Length: 252
Image (tube, rainbow, N blue to C red):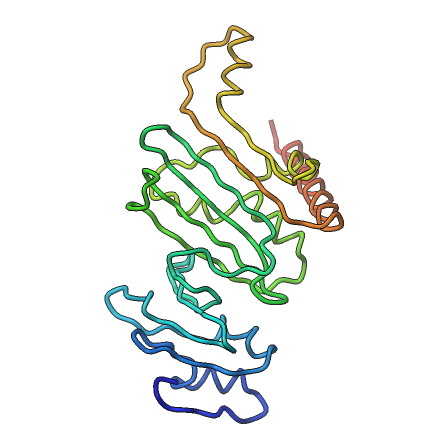
């Protein structure tokens, strides 16, 4: 690393990396090169620590087994080193399970984008990007990286409450979440679904209702197998039933 080679030995390699600054620190302006087995590589997002000043975290770069890794801000205000070539672009996911985009407003829109996928076997990553104005100036990104035991639990949590809601730059996020579009996308041949506020306006106009809405739309794209979709459907049904029962148990 950083011009010198350090060989990590011992039975517990992960513990050695985590307790050795020269092994765990990824410093701005220096490209670290790491060669390790796949089991250790899967643990690196939880072991590597970026070291930078004046918010120049994008200068912290690493080459892990020939692949580019970069630093991304996390939803809790920390930073993580993960696979990706550019800190300001979407990190690498293999596969990317789903993407969701929502836009509110026409001339100065609020644009939100989030995706979820597999970072490494057993590790899920959620990425969110916010852009006020749609021109990339007033924007921000975050990721969250978690070990997973149950794919459906993680995916349904993303559908119902993405970290995008915590990134909305102080603005009120649109009331639509990705779960509203899941059934339509899951049943479509291309696994995609779109909602547009203009369609709701047309329906309300037909019912002679007065409408004053902000133009907005949302889009969900899935890349899931039939078996994964069935798991998500079952989990959503169970969550909806639980919510229904809890609401009925509350005193009037």
